Image 1 (cartoon, rainbow, N blue to C red):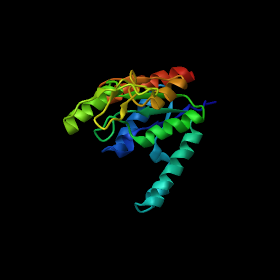
Image 2 (cartoon, rainbow, N blue to C red):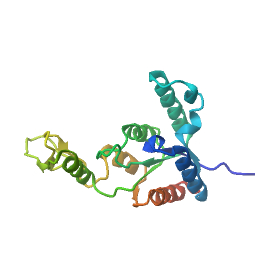
Image 3 (cartoon, helix red, strand yellow):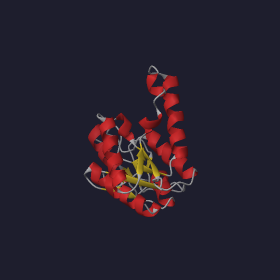
Image 4 (tube, helix red, strand yellow):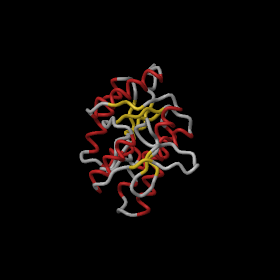
Amino acid sequence: MQTKLPSVYLAGDLVFRPEALSIFERLKAICADYGLEGVAPFDGQAEARLMPPGRETILAFVRADRALMDQCDAGLFCVDPFRRAADMDPGTAVEIGYMHGLGKPMEGYTVDGRLYPEKVEAYWGKSWKQTLRPRVEDGAPASGSQEDPDGMLVHSEGLFQNGMVDGFIGFSGGEISVDPDFYEAFRKAAKRLSERLGS
């Protein structure tokens, strides 16, 4: 009797990348190497993909993705910076929060091993030719010691992304694997998840 492999939701900005279908096929093959069944967002979107672009289509995608997360046993999340900014894809961040709420195991991965404040500093320097400055104590609790030129706190020191992202992945027992090669970063995360699930 064949045992069903643990199903794993594959999330990130990957759905927006060129050759997205090919990327997911390769990720699924890596999952199979570790006794996991990779499930791409596209796998639940057949009906929505027949609809014309627009609000209702996007909401159909959202409902389909939520249904996949409900069905999957765990998640593998790409937390690479998105659209040349410091922060990751916001939709993926929401998915991490949703799967944390479901109590499912998660692992993250990225090609960018810089800590979050470094990413913010690089973004401001490259885009606006401005630097960060020390945060002046104002009595409010702070999760960082610097602020950007708009006066916004540069938070989440010691983490790769917003503390909610790193934190929720960590609370599930996971971590964020780093490698400059995208597929190697994913492989590290898949291996960790497989070991955790006993695959």
